[in-house]
Length: 314
Image (tube, rainbow, N blue to C red; front, side, top):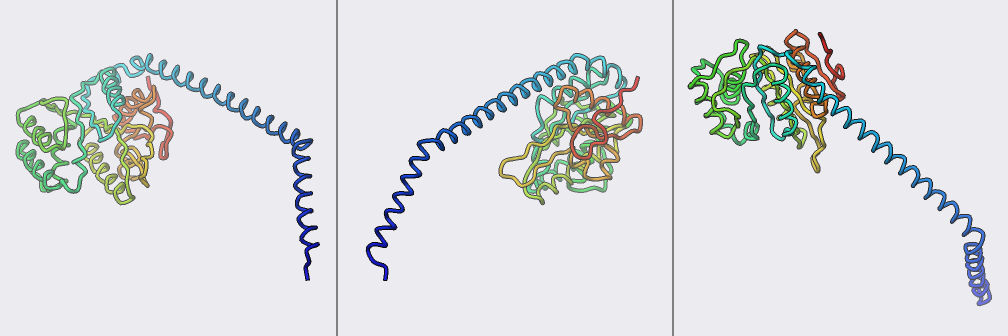
């Protein structure tokens, strides 16, 4: 039977252990631990400062590289697309600055910019299928298209007929009426009311996100649009930047990735995944030049790229 003396000895042992811990902690152990922690903090501060210095240097180098690319861009692209007409087709959520830079480089290349078409979210909204069908029928009637397509296939046929042709034509009242049908339906915005056809299409990519099924359906729709342009034009290039993951969404993609993921689309349209960077707009023009010379390339640093930049030919 355990008596009171056992409890007393146990209690005394506990207090002795505490006393020893306090003495050691306040003495040699305290100094040793304090020195170690101080050294670690100092080392971390030094490492942080070194990383900040490297980051600052890297940012300055990137800025300098972008400034150089912008400065030499007119010389790099000059007259490369002379005699061609280019339409810029902007996907929803595309970066506005990137769009402006691509419009500028098209002009610098010697090509004529026929206009900029901004595709609205309703183009991909399953709930707006009836409106797209109605707009497609109105556009087809205005253009006098003899098409067996219906629904989204028909409106896509109308858009391709308006935007691109291997033998470009000028603006006409019929084309203006067809374009107005798509604009009035909320499917497009256009920088011009009268749109001549172009022989080159540059599709500016934007991010889209959601569940796997949603992103897969959007990717299919984007590929159909790109294939339609590629089939009716002399060159189609899809340009964009790397995707930025959407908060709270399981999957994020863009038009460049959608094209590269499908071998059929990747074989008919070129892509540039770094069009936001300083050398990106020039790379887009060089990619167009490649396609016109029957070379389909995928340029940049993301998955599916076949080279960082196109070859610069004399």
